[in-house]
Length: 236
Image (cartoon, rainbow, N blue to C red; front, side):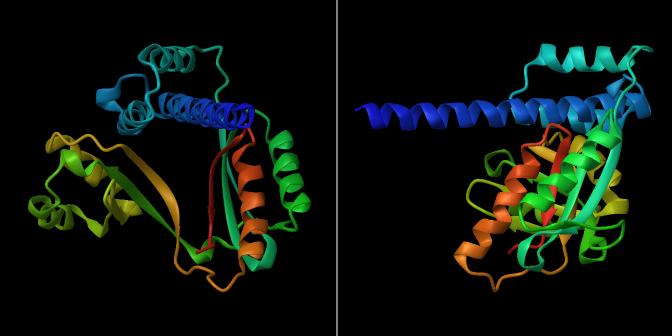
């Protein structure tokens, strides 16, 4: 009985940790969007996307409004977006997107995570050629008829559409991201999330379970860092 309670408690805390991390990440997305394009969602596509992502993770409306208000203040210094590249164990390429108010702290922490997990922080461009910058939209299959929408999506710029039982993922070229956002808005479709991501052009699929676990330990350490927004890798 005690062991079952401890297991449930552990799962509950893990769920709260993930929720808190999502709220922090999206709060930074909102702040950056406001600094770049203003506090009016109707005039700021990036802010609209960030607000939609907030809705997708059930971020309370008052937290979203407070994030916009804070970022609108002249006293708010905002965040700097920085990207780091490197290799994890067994030659797996890794890209780390950060939003920080202290780049000295951030690069030191990112380097520490790589070093502690048998990886190495590289220079700009060292692994980015293995990825393509793409727009990635997650849709709820219950909210769209993908058979009817597929041709329209392709006309709007979709490069690939992955259909799974609980999620539909639409990919588009980096330059088509704004047009695809507009397409969903015109169709009155609210994606679960809409982001620009680094999608690997090739993946490494010849590792043992033990080696995979070693790589994932680095990914988990990076994702747990407060300054890290997203981690991408070439692990299959």
